[in-house]
Length: 146
Figure 1 (cartoon, rainbow, N blue to C red):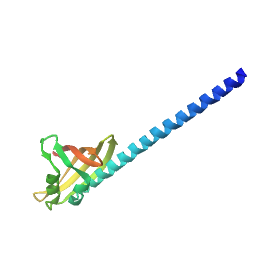
Figure 2 (tube, one colour):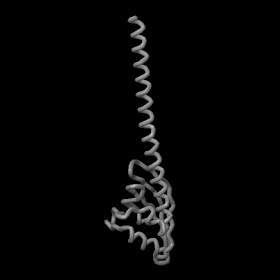
Figure 3 (tube, one colour):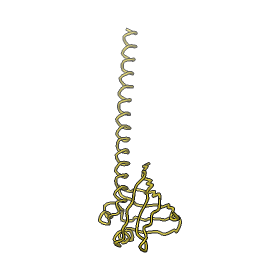
C-alpha cells in the first residue's frame, strides 16, 4: 500500500511538473512571438520612413512626433517633416542595415539629395523610438562633412 501511494505521488508530481512546464512554454513562447512580431512591424515602418514619401507621414509618425539632430540641436515635428519631403527637391535614402530592440529601431543609411544644384550624399544613423506602432521620436546622427 505504501509503495502504491508513493508511486501515485510521484506520477502526480510528474503531471504537475509537466503541466507547469507547458503553461510556462505557452505563456513565454507567445510573448516572445508577439515581441518578435512587434519588432518586425517596427522595422517595416522604419523602411517606409526611408522611402521619403510625404503621403506616408500620418501612417508612420505619431501625433507628438519629434526629430532631433545631435550636432545642430535642430528639432522637427510631423508638419516640418511633411514640408521637407514635399519641397520638390530630389531625395533618396539607401538603407545599409537595421537593428530592432524593444521600442527602438536603429537604421544606418545614406541620403542623397540635390542642394543648390549639386548632388550631396551623406551617411547617417537614425535611432527611432516607437509608440503604438508609429515613430514617436528620431535621434539623427550624421556625417555631413562627407
